[in-house]
Length: 112
Length: 111
Image (cartoon, rainbow over all chains, first blue to last red; front, side, top):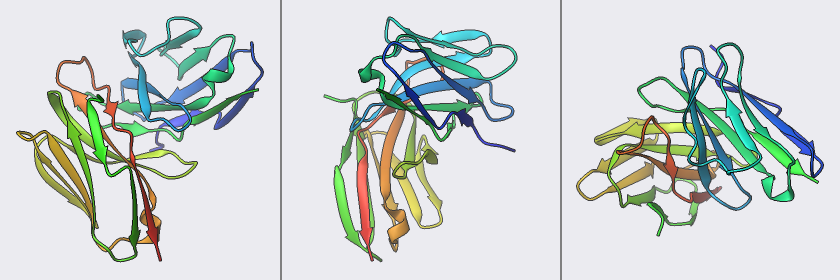
């Protein structure tokens, strides 16, 4: 019973490129959350999804960021035209409706 | 002011000491989580509490809903306990189970 799988673990992008971060939730978990941890800062909520639906995206930057959780396949966090300020650790968590989060190992994005 | 405040920010202890990390919150919650984050590593959920007390090995978590306060205790601390400990709450009025986090407590246990 694999945990929450995130890939890649490390991602380097040049300014202006696109970054795609993937998250496969634990088996049986229908809720996916994306959180961002900027350097030297705490974790901040970005978006909450269920299959094929965005439930709460109040933490997402208004531009360049999007997320999806398709019927088949992993959840994707997509960042277009990356800037240096996007460099951070991005964590995905999944949960059943009871709300106990299981976290992935994170994707560390570095924009050069 | 953050909705979730942790103290202390940094804590250094000698191996074997009893450790307490505190968390206060200012909003209504439906659950409180304690998380552990190792350097360069992922995040592990330690506890989820909505009342009372929970124990797992050398870790004990308590919550007082009336006082809006939770504590994480580590008994007989060990250098491998060195990590950042994060308090997170599920706000009562939000949809789903999204978490709001404290800034974390950096714990260093010296041998």
